[in-house]
Image 1 (cartoon, rainbow, N blue to C red):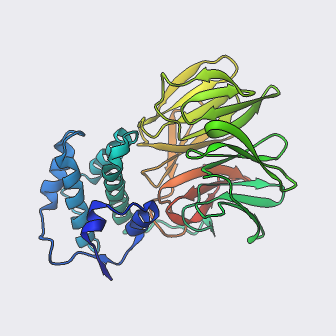
Image 2 (image 1 turned 90 degrees about the vertical axis):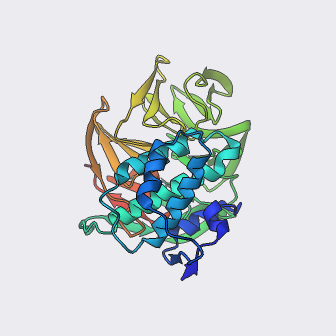
Length: 365
């Protein structure tokens, strides 16, 4: 048992991993120093306050305290918790590109996660058909190269090459956040935080391609190499080809699914951008079921999208008409907690969560 402190409530710890680990701590308690507040009034205020109201952050702090205080009880059925989660998601996205707003972003996402975890605690959904693999916390992505798996992690040596669950090699590759596969079978390692892009070849060599900005993803089309930067510039063989600045603030993730480049900006809620590499046509794809899309893949004629704020995989047809959703939120094996990567491997959807140490594996649906 550990009592929450003022540092916890204010999230004044500058170590982001400590702040996320705090969310995962199931032994937190509230001391008698913090008087009980009416959670109904707190949530009413959160729903009704403007995003730029300074009182909103204070109410998010109060909500955190009451959620921890009552974590062993079912959530009140007098509150529409889904609306609270949506408001928290929007607080996060609307403050994403404000350097001074890290505190309120973290408080919003923290409450969203705690609410969803509490909601799903009493969900007895059968998880027997969900396969999983323990990979650890704070993993960004995973791809296969030959008979090996390569993980982008948050460790000091942050690129792990694994064979049959044994780590064969480790590299330092900037601050990797995404891995993509080239037609040769080699991998590219992109980042939303460090400059350039790394190439990992099948013979195990790691090489850096220098750029003056972070490169999110690299892909091939018609014998040309394309590189998408964090600030929204698409390069063709190192020369600027297209600029997404009119449509996006910052690119956090992107995937090329022939012939489309899907661009994800966490500050744009309920949508993603689709760019046709063949004719340079760009569309905004509306996804009303999703708060903040975090990754996308395709199997046959179905797209699969994960939501940073919800523990679901959403499936869509080729016209992006919603079909189904699957999985649930949580820390247990077979659940998702801040899902960050989805990929098709050996006929199964493999989903990595940043805050769940288990990678889920399910059949396409």
